Length: 339
Image (cartoon, rainbow, N blue to C red):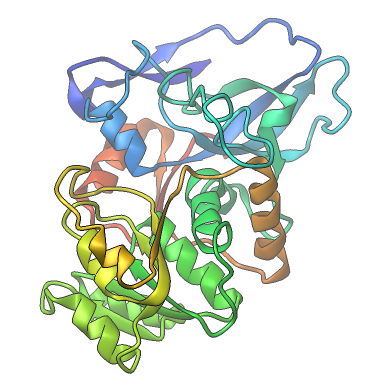
């Protein structure tokens, strides 16, 4: 079978096709799946370009998120059967409850081989069922971006309908969060450097939009759009160049979910900004399988269709990674491995 592996120190050009023998026989709790589609995350670009802050297995098969169809189940597997449509869970061991070091390791696409191959063999517990309203292309966007957005919105302090949520940028997590927050009755503000993308966000239901290029002190615009109160919750993906403004944009008692650091993970932050406003920060490590199930229930009940910006063919892997790294996407970037 064909798979992609990463050749170290060659950047995106190091994403190369190799032929691998599929696992000949399944162990009792394993499932063999035909991969139909894979979605990309910023993490995948960081790994491929040598910028990931953790060690990566030599020659690893990249990516963590896929959707596909079960081909075969091992002895003792009762939850699944051939023909079932499934997705990967981001973590193999985080089934429920709070996270721990044992639950969030190993990681697909870095510590162990990931999903960018024609077939995968996984433990039966590492799969989630595709929502009935989604095809393979849209379903593969859920394991990382979808669960991260769910956890960031609903895994911490209670956010009631009518709460104001601020989203930074229009990448996969932010646009997924826009759709989920809208379905939950929240008021959504969103930032971007592109007026065109902001117009698309308004079409999806954003109540207020801010161009951070033309309005560099965008935290003040958040206060203006909320009548001076501020946002109840912020999904922070920017890192050192945005985190202070994110906290300043909050209402008293508000919270920030720290999801990523597009601008880097260093820099200084004044904790007094939290103290005097009774504000909170919470780090987000995607989420558990239980959260994934809750996400899928809302996706199906509200008939949410995740936003896919572009779909690339399997042979266009390098182009897909390059497109994601350009930052011009709106929503998710997907590679169709098989039709």
